[in-house]
Image 1 (cartoon, rainbow, N blue to C red):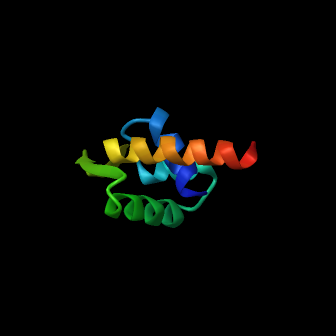
Image 2: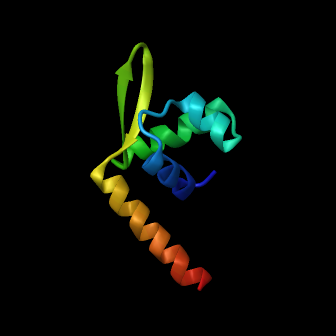
Length: 78
């Protein structure tokens, strides 16, 4: 699971929990949680507490980074 994988996933899934991301990406809860925390610290993802669970969504900066990384990947792959 890469940063781009998570950003792309969050672009279509709103109010995603770390557990839901782990199930959908086939990773552990711990790995998903750590990735999300790193993205929050970078300002790419925001988290809010809802019904006792943290839910995650892309920030405007996260949307911009996602577009940039997808463009770069397309240029590299050709």
